[in-house]
View (cartoon, helix red, strand yellow):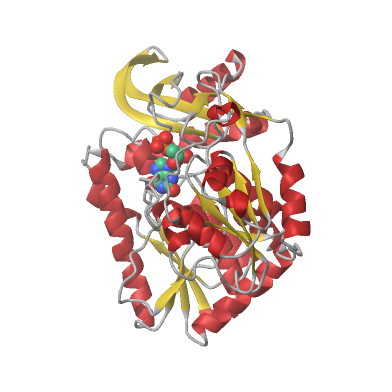
Length: 465
Ligand code: XMP
């Protein structure tokens, strides 16, 4: 992408601003990438015919307004930046750094804005705006750097398909389809590029939600006509995790078994096939060159690169989640899939506590379907970012039709969050919760208690395991 479109590189000095700025730049249909200072200092990093300008982002810092100049924390960086001989826009504490590093004496286009933040305890920092970043960014990008704004969704689709075709030639491509947004968009995009050279493999590990395996088969095989191998491996997985209590062990077993099943299926293609994966840009940034690892979750679909495949096809590797959704919409995927809430790779297995059994899974699946269905029916879906039921594994005494029961407790979880790192519980009307309670305890056998979770993240996590 960088070789085809005007590009702005963002050097991230830490503090989270780079993510804000890259979205703004890309919103102008200008292609942009984030670099760590270390990468930026590597020879050749800040050059290239399409490179039009450099943005350096520091922190939003209230000390910036006192006139104090921050210590230059990245010796050598500014030399590389000035050496690129391109317009530079320094934002936040990077503006003062730039001046200190000698930017004032240069006869080139160097711009800086300092950002002052107001942060109350527990709140996100608010940028105090004597100016808006956008007011500075737009003229910098278009007038100073001369970007044309040609990185459109149409251009992306065409070039991504082209790139896939060139990479795989006439070889087969195999894709692990989970039904999640990323793998669905990859499958559809690759299918558009190479047609029936693509085979999707959907491994049903037995921990999918109600009706999910059927919906995935119908959508991809029937609606989109994408060749799909659906493997019902539920018995294999359940046999392996039955009785395992330790959450990490459970995740590990499921992850390993998933790879085993997938490889068994993929081995039919005899090492000649490419593996298409839904890797997205945050995965690259977060695991990347010296950047801190933020994400500790591993998708079941996170397959190791190994000898089984000719190579890896990752058409979404430079996109953010929202951009993947935009691509999905452009490819005609339905809103129900595009706006799907996150679902952990190990699925219901991490929502079924205290040892998985087929009975507990069945009870959970039914209760979960009722809760989710009711939320949508009552128009509450927008209140929550994620909602589901949990099988607590707890059995307790109850009474039904005058007879003593010893049945399960189901917990209901619904949270609102922007980033899934901090979340608060959703406040549903009491009458709604009562209605869900009534439906679950009457329609789902072996449930005699329903509880609603009040705890946010932190101190809890969103999932229970
Ligand atoms: P926690 O439970 O850590 O979850 O608060 C944060 C978000 O991550 C999702 N999650 C996963 N997503 N694979 C995923 O792709 C996983 O194994 C996994 N485990 C948790 C969780 O649903 C929530 O949205």
